[in-house]
Length: 166
Ligand code: ADP
Image (cartoon, rainbow, N blue to C red; front, top):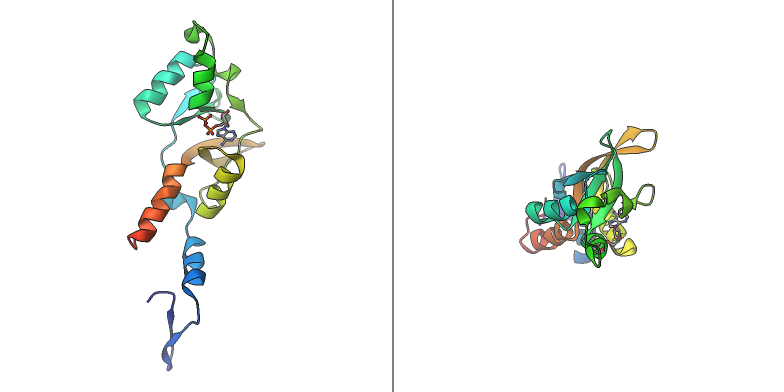
């Protein structure tokens, strides 16, 4: 009955008056990115498109984040970015990912204390599959500390159905 009944000293339990929808909304607005994020897979700006494709396969992810020499977020590589770069090109080993990535400051990010609902809204609005979870590194630079993908968001739905929300 969590959310529907509340305890009050000397009164006991009382009905909060919340509807199912209000209570669900309430529960969803308590979930933060840190409870649902995954480990980020990163490559370096100087890595080749070929290396990035191998990493994507080996690490079994759909989005890679690119970092510069100081390990700050520099770019994003999606499956289609890499496919596009390989089409009609022979020498993917000679093309650095920095040429084809979506680069800062055009990257949509989130922080671990953001609501999952905020991250989900960004994924839908921008029509992308993943957001890097970042920490401020000073001077408008970010350190990558995780990733939120559509799969992480789907897990919220599954946990909800199994009454196992974090
Ligand atoms: P795909 O390109 O495989 O359909 P996405 O929909 O995630 O995958 O990516 C679409 C485009 O948006 C790509 O060019 C990618 O580099 C870019 N992109 C992906 N994630 C982000 C992000 N978090 N911020 C900005 N651009 C992104």
